[in-house]
Amino acid sequence: MSFDHLKEQQSVELLQRSLERGRLGHAYLFSGPSMDELEVLARMLAQTLNCQQPPRRGASGMPLDCCDRCLSCRKINAENHPDVQWIRPESKTRIITIDQMRELIQAINLKPTEALCKVAVIVAADRLNVQAANAFLKTLEEPPPKSVIILLTIEPGQILETVLSRCLRLNFTGEQEFAVRDLNADWLAEFGALASGKQKGLLSRYRLLGIVLGRLGELRNDAEKTVTARSPLERYDDIEPKLRERWEDEMAAAIEAEYRRRRLELFIALQWWLRDIWLHTLIEGEKRLAVPNLAEASRDVAERISTVDATENLHVLEQLQSLLATNVQEALALEVGLLKLKL
Image 1 (cartoon, rainbow, N blue to C red):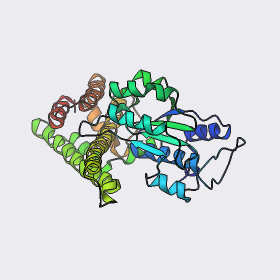
Image 2: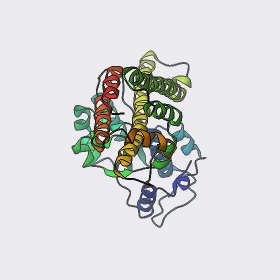
Image 3: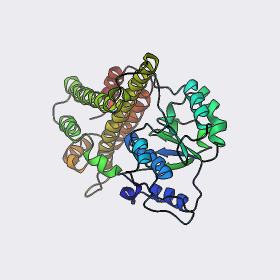
Image 4: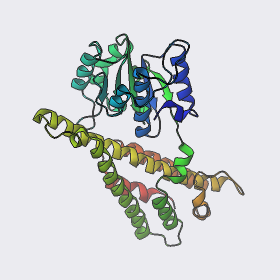
């Protein structure tokens, strides 16, 4: 894939303008709703900077896109290019450690092996602990010549201010409206149908919990399959024990990060539906709904609760998402949160 496939993205246009004028920044923070999409964008920028047969060049002579076919592009796409470093949270604590950052600093300060521009990509940069971030600040502010650092996050609010201030921020919204309509459509339809039904009480509330937990179980299984398939452990058989242990830790952390990302998307979808209910309590007649296929369920719930209750529902879900970002027991937090909703 190349930038040409994402021409509608304003942030992609800004990147290409910077390339055309020879004014690419030395450090970027890419944020957006999908970590997979952010990794693709970082990979495309790394490919563009090092493409051996770029399809277009700007007035400055800089490439504006990648061919996605040359040896350099293929290596970067497979994440085995020696001059493109990928840093991901390690261990089940999902933390990017100071040791990882020290290794990255050492690697990025070496002369390129074969690349025109060295690239470092820090996935889930919100998981940098304070010590790791502080160790990296000087390099982030003044990286070596012909190098670019790209930080990726779906939670920019969790990034340390000292890191934010040293990066150019680009927000990639992608097809957010499409995601709201289609993400987890089946489970949300089932949830909405039960929530809007006449049967109320503790039993129905625990049925709602069962729907959510069931969907989360599916998301975790899918995350494990996705991450395992792209792990280097699946591509290499003869691996040194120390390297194997590191890759296993990275894979475990990546599975947890991917699961949390998908869980966040699930609750964003639910939050949009609760927003529709709130909108129904405020406005009569036609309105712009985020989840139009649940319009009837939204209206049914809105008819029996007040605007104050609908507003409180949104606050409850925000609090639940904040709580789930910690090490709280997931099932218990979900149980308490769902029992608080006014439905």
